[in-house]
Structure formats: structure tokens, C-alpha cells
Image 1 (cartoon, rainbow over the protein chains, first blue to last red):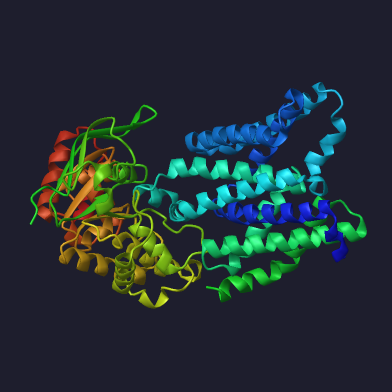
Image 2 (image 1 turned 90 degrees about the vertical axis):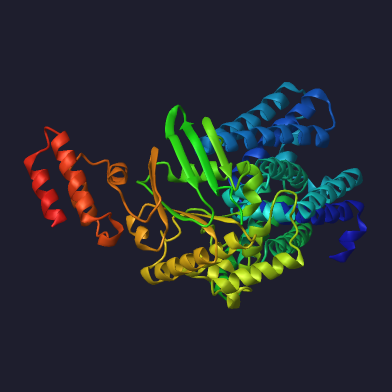
Length: 271
Length: 285
């Protein structure tokens, strides 16, 4: 098993998985406690439009996807602030539109259709060293932002109305959180792909919540869980010749269902 | 110690989508007052609080809070909003929740002084022993006390409470109102919003009724004008409504006053049904 690590592509895959786990644990925790999972799903799927745009125009994929996803997240942030009651419908529309735009752009680009699956289900075993460095930089960016704004984020997440009444810039933080979500989502797409990105953003934080007495601990625990899922998933994928993204999510989902009975008890004991 | 009024609203109107939620509201509240704001649901009570907090800007008129612009006065306001329960699964301790009350624009990390004040606030509401507990493990009444501690944690000059008793049981309610009265005796200015008219008997010093327009009475009594705002009742019907709501007699203005007002109203209204007049007399007896 360990000899797998002598391959460059396995080293890169492991590094990418661990880096993605950090972003998923930290941003996923904020997404879960703010009940923005559906919004994060919308952001993730508009990322597909970014991938399509990169293929159609020949721009580098990662920066182009991040650009499109950031624009989509800003739009969604505006919509959710302005028309709260119909925000979910608008998110649904943007979700579908982003996806369709990606497919149409790829349709119009000759020769790339074979690569489509790798963005839907991830291509962790094909992550180049340069992308690992970009992911590391994005991780640092996300961590710096969350550490810097931890308390206002906490105030907003706990009680947005009260936070606003105390002068916390809740609207700006909402934009920032969705931008950070966009960046993290694009990172995770490399690892597990678009379709499964939601699992890594939601499952580890959801599992961590009842065992955490603070949001910070929830972030740390969720990151650790995501790392375990990624490493175990990668190992299974290597030894059983399974697709890596799906193996990681299978491990996460299985752990999630197995720990469901413990959740209720944990919440009471840890309070 | 300070002569500027705690609240000064002058001809304040605020509209949602063209329909005025509050209209031409005038209110001058001296410091140290304990005001109960009554009104039916949807009557504009919460809008009034949001205007005072600067979360909404009036369409016309001016709002001054503690002699200042509402936004600038915010750090000196303690606020407890309606249904301040939050998600019970949220991973946060009681102490950290209370520390959220010290947060302010550009002032995010709690200092040692903030910690001391947060613990003191918890002691004042009798929740000091629960500081390390998770917020989700508390009962509704205990949580409400924690949220009051949060409102007190910034050492405010003015306390705004939106339906503080709505979700707690009768015993918790008594404790809460005793605590409020004690705070008021120590000099705190309190504005308490409620849809429950019986709070007037809870040692408040003045009453305002808001149902789009506002009527303020600087003593703990319900006046005839207020009853009309509260229940939207036709002239002559109000007293029976109030009695039917189980209101303690002492919060009503004197009986002679009610008789006089009801008589005047009956004389003014030519087409009051006989049944309504009869039941009014029954209610007054």
C-alpha cells in the first residue's frame, strides 16, 4: 500500500486531498451553520459554466473557473439579500443555467468531450504539481480570511439580526462567505468533481457539529474527518481500482450513516 | 445625570412597499423610563424597534437615540429580538453567546473586561453556573435569560426587548418581569414590546400603543385611545373586550374615566347596536 506513495501522481493526489479537506472543513462548517448548503450547490454548479468557458476560449481552467464562480456567488449573494423569500428559486435557476452553459460551451468546442467526466467526478489522480501549489495558496487565503473575520462570522452565523444590530457588517460578510465558498468549491472540484462536491462540504461538518463546543472546533474536527475520508477513499481506490472521487464520497457517506445513532447522544453529552 | 431623552421620534413614517407600517409617530422617552409598547401583531411594533436600532431608515421624520443618530448609538443599546432562539444545534457555549453582545463594528475580539462583564451579566440572570454549557442544552426559559445577559453584556444605557416573555412559561415570566423591574430601579431605560396587554401590570412606568399610529401615555394605564388602537373596536365596545382579555383592573384608568369615555362614545355614535351598549355596561359593572 505504502509503495503507492512513491508515484508522483499519488503524492500529488494525497496533497490535493489534504488541502481540499482543510478548505472543506472550514468553509463547509460555515456553510452548514448558515444553512447555505443549497446556495453552495448552486455556486458549485455554475462552476461548470466556468469550465466550459475555459475550454471554449482556451483560457487556463482554474483561474477561469474561479472567476466565473466568484461572479456567480456575488450574484447569488445579492439575490439572497434582496429577495430572501424567493432566493431558493433563483438559486435553482442559476444552478441549471450554469450547468447548461458549461455543456453548450463544451459542445461548441471540438475535441474536449472526453474530459467532461473528469470535471463531473473529479480527476484527483491527474492533479499536476502546479495545481497543488495553487490549491495551497487558496487554502492560505481562505484560512487567513476566516481567522481574521472569525468572530464577526460567528456572530452572523449564530444570529444575523442581532449581529446587524450590534454593527457587524452582515451583508459584506455574506458576500465574503459566498466568495470563499466559491474558491473552496473550485478547489474541491479537482478532487472529487462537481457532482460530489456537496458531500465533502456538508458531510464532515454535519458529522462534527454535535461533537464540537465551538465553531472553531467544528472546523478543525470537520477538516480532520475530511482528511480521513480522503485518505481511506484514495487507498481503497488504489487497491481496488475504483474511481477515486466516488470512493472518497462512499467512505464519507458510509461513516455518516453509521454514526447517525451516536449523534443524538453525543449532542447531549457534549453540552 | 443626562437631560437628553433616551428616545426622541419626531413625525416618523416608515413604509414597506408603499404601505405605511408606522405613520407620523411622535415619542419622547426620558431616561430611566420603563416603557411597554403594546399593539396587535403586524401593528408596527418590531418596525419601531428596527427604526430605533437604525436597521431601517424612516421614510420621513427623525429618530434620535440617546441624543445621537441611531447607528452611532447602537453600541449603547442592548437588544433582545423576538424569538432569539437561534438554531439549538449551534456549536457554541453559553459564555461565547453572551460575549457576542460585546461585539461591535471594528471591535471584534473580546477583551478581559468583556469577559468579566459577560460573566457578571450571566450572574445577574442567574446563569453563571451554565457558562461552559452548550446553548442547545438549555431549556427555553434558561436560553432567554442567556439572551438577556447577552443584551446586558455591552453595559448598555438603553435596553430594547421584543416580546421577551413570548416563549417562556408562567414561572419564567414572573422571574423575567421581576428582573426587568429590578434593572429599571437601578436606572436602566427599558423599552419592552409586547402583544400581551397584561405586561402593563408589571411595574412599567409608561405605555405606548402602536397600530400604525402611536399613542403614548406617561403612566402605566391603558387609555381609551389606546384601546381603540389595540383592538380596532367600534366606539362603546372596548371595555368589554378588555375585561374579556383578563386584564387586571388596576392597569385600566379609573372606572369613572371609562364610563365617561364610553358614554361620550355612545352619544357620538348614532348607530351603535343595542347589544353592544348592553354588554359594555355589563363589562363595566
